[in-house]
Image (cartoon, each protein chain N blue to C red):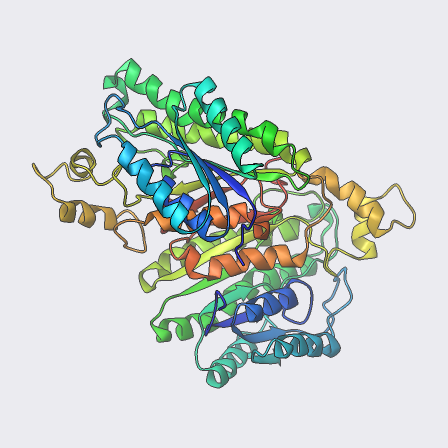
Length: 277
Length: 277
């Protein structure tokens, strides 16, 4: 018996990284999936774009668990695209219970004064407004079910504290917390809970790439993942460099489940102690 | 298969209410239990003390789940008694993995300026130093584990915000957040995680008594449980009367399990949104 039997979850950024992991963990616990991903390059992104092959792999992994998935190419910068994908998904799967607003990017890094306007505005458009669009498209369906629900936003340790050279990212991830708290109040009377998760660095394509390694190891010409982990440990209290996607997924499962039926408005770090260090 | 198979959990205040609920939920997930409780009067407490019959009932229910429990009468104000209870429990059950610093009191409320010295000091001795003594007795055992362990401190929404007439309780519950954060840093190199849980009103004798009802309904001479419930619903946006003990236990199970293996230094409200209201 799964902890999410019969539920349907909407996941943004589902093609790979944390999004794929969430899809698999939720499917393991009995949920069906509605997923979207931009599946296309983002200007200035520090990681290579997700591909249709990535998306297909997520679909295959969910179906191998005998769960259903409706996966659509859609961009969180377009409310019309997100809305259509959610509406189609609900039409096919019959209901919506959980939203995981996971899609996000990491782009050009540098002191705030040197960021381009395009970089800043695009970041907010994806990492903050994209979360709002995902919720706006989903909320009517959750309300229509009349069973309550759970919305979980992927913020970051950078949503609770600052890191130099990523002012646009830090601003967007802090903004998510304000949106989360507002939605928690607005939706409480419908028994829809809203929370945010704040990961430290996670071993995904967003972090596991040369640009990020170089940011952390300016002392090395060609830093490796091991060199990165060594430097990243300094940020965490626990003696680890990064967490795995499944660690974030496990927190999502708990927050989505009835075990957390009265947990709302909460910022939950999954950060190896980065925030308190 | 339980989520805590083979683990041993130490629970202070195990005779009834949240402590008993934690013992049963952890036993359901496969853990054995070391528990202790004061089983004696506390000056100024508005609720009757836990009894040996309460303790016996906890033991009976854990054993009915086919788990072992070593239950001892001990006072968190007495370092030697706590240490003896923990050492004896570990001697019998072979190990220690999880600590729930749950024992606490809420005594004679009043404005801070009117509070008696011993009422204030007793609260700190039990609710703060008592948690420290429990952790101190347990840590040497936790450090023997290759995979570390998990310490979870029961704070309160009163550990994150103020309430009039609760100065002693609010101060004590804020203080354990400082203790939690310090322990999280000190124990991180040993993979021992330390977190606090912050419940709203929970349906236990600490809350369901005349003193609390009068505090919440100063407008009525003899408020009933229903009068209290009406006021309590206004304190959280979900509009619930009270949490149940197992809502807190479910958060404890999550934080104790490997699903939360990189969560440390976190203040986790389980409060139906009280904090964001």
